[in-house]
Image 1 (tube, helix red, strand yellow):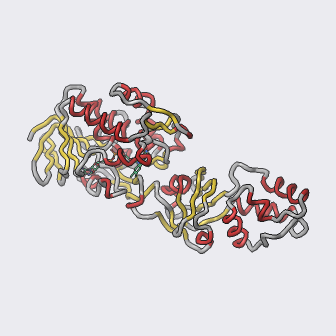
Image 2 (cartoon, protein in one colour):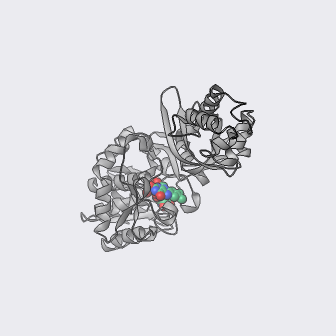
Image 3 (cartoon, protein in one colour):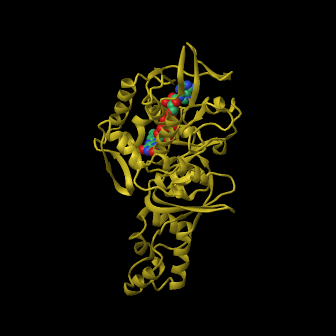
Length: 396
Ligand SMILES: Cc1cc2nc3c(=O)[nH]c(=O)nc-3n(C[C@H](O)[C@H](O)[C@H](O)COP(=O)(O)OP(=O)(O)OC[C@H]3O[C@@H](n4cnc5c(N)ncnc54)[C@H](O)[C@@H]3O)c2cc1C
């Protein structure tokens, strides 16, 4: 079967590329190995589809932020929302700038994309996996188990490896590598972290506002948010955001249990002095989860019942310093099955961010999560997928 453009993957990147190019009159076939298109759109944001964020900065991306921002500048959060408004989908902003559909239903977003594809005559072939691709004499050939397709342009938008139940891409990177692209080793991101040691077992079930600092000889990054202690280590937005870099060999990770409270030690010492019957555990419980305080003080070998007559202001300062800079030993991320995003992928220096075209093979485009770009939580991964799909679609 002959067509103008073949697109591998019917996620946000592939569907947006199809619509953008389809509006310019191109004949398009999208291959989707899953039974349905856009499964990750449906699952995103707990079914509410956190599609974008009202703010963006380099800190929102763990790998290749400059590349990611160049692409997003070509199709911003406002432009994405305007695009969807044209399809009858409206959005609202939630805490931390998260943009979600006004209906709070991911299905609204996916339905709009699929209806527009149908209106433009884009053919989406579900349950059809691209198993091999090649280019000969300016023609791309894509083989599936059922059919052989040929086209003048090819977009690989196969996504990442995470959450295999929703359609992951073990082949996407291999297909791009077949055209000479370098692949940065893929690893789970936006994923819980496993810890070594025993202290976190006593913290199991504790949910706490915190900050995680990831430090390497080259950089230091701080990730704020809710942190949840589990049977294997840590989860929650704070840990998930830190996971991409925190699980890298050679990085050091620290938890701050007293975030945003620079004078915590002074105010705790003052409180304990004015209330001589108050224990150190009670004084800390106003700031740290009660069960957590108990476990942390036990780890520091501090008597939780100690009052101001037992601990000096200097000792309180030392305790708070440790609570603000608690070293954890990350043994690794949980598996790809728990990873919302994949870090690593197609090396971005081999892709033009203004067109998404490969610098190695003319007519080949790569978009979305398959690239070595991974954002923190808050809508950045979806925005990057849509933006890169748009950029590819307008260049095809
Ligand atoms: C549970 C969950 C919740 C999430 N929530 C959010 C959120 O709220 N906000 C946010 O920004 N991000 C979220 N993400 C991440 C976001 O969904 C992804 O970053 C985004 O979907 C990536 O888009 P994509 O088009 O690049 O890839 P995908 O959405 O993964 O789409 C790629 C498609 O290609 C198909 N495919 C792969 N290989 C082949 C092949 N060889 N042949 C044919 N088809 C193929 C796959 O089946 C898949 O459907 C979430 C992810 C998960 C798993």
